[in-house]
Length: 337
Image 1 (cartoon, rainbow, N blue to C red):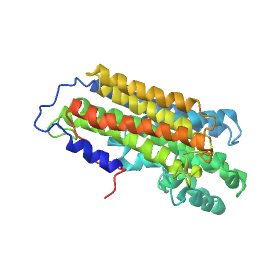
Image 2 (cartoon, rainbow, N blue to C red; image 1 turned 90 degrees about the horizontal axis):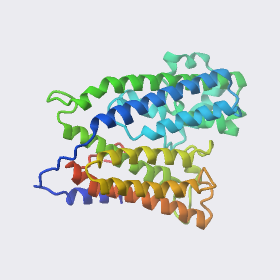
Image 3 (tube, rainbow, N blue to C red; image 1 turned 120 degrees about the vertical axis):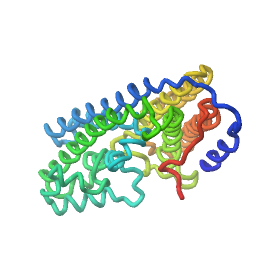
Image 4 (tube, helix red, strand yellow; image 1 turned 90 degrees about the vertical axis):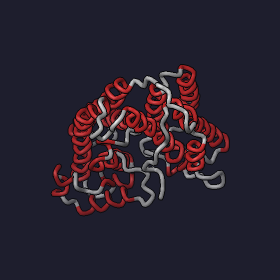
């Protein structure tokens, strides 16, 4: 269905019509949403690392809160999956999900069973599989009861600290890399990564579509499954009860970008705001934070309604925002062959 909408949007494109001058506030987007967002992620990740150095007790309120704060900081900017984020697998090292083959728990169990201290050294750990790096690995280590019973406490603690230290290092490098990458976005050049402002705008526009597609197909579509067979255990970060909040953070950040891109059309910007408000209000009302109630027909209908609005945001971006900007959707990491 998503591919249908992609090509439908392209076929409806106003070929032969000169692109409008949308007066896109690229400077504000780059400096505020991107650089500012990755600095917030860096700072939150530093707090998380310090919290895990103080204690590895998953029941510790400070450790849980710092984990949540850092994870949500990532979700708010996770749609910026180009540039430094895609280099060196930085994005996947922070957020390896979905994981349909269960590589994360399998690899973590193997690591804990072998208790190899040498693998936890910072320079060695960054060479390990992305399946045991980042926030989803912590979702298992801190909140999965079966993993908590494996191995010895000292090694699990050292592993937790290795992961949080890796997140701290990765996010610091990301923040620095985006600051260094920013001039190429703000002042595109014929020999640069982006040659024109239109190319920059297209990259930002595609980030909106990619972010909304991920929210619809992964964060909502995976746990929804089918009416006959819902898959609540496929919900993102269900162990830490962050499924709802991660979705809310991602929607907030992605819609904020869409609104900024729609600055030249106040009515369109307001439309994004209204759609976003609908999803946010419905999500706030959910008592089940991990989408585990999908066997209940009423709960399922409510989540399906949220997905419908998320899809409306995607279509609005594809069919209204793109023509306003004079750019077309490009392929992204969620597209197949």
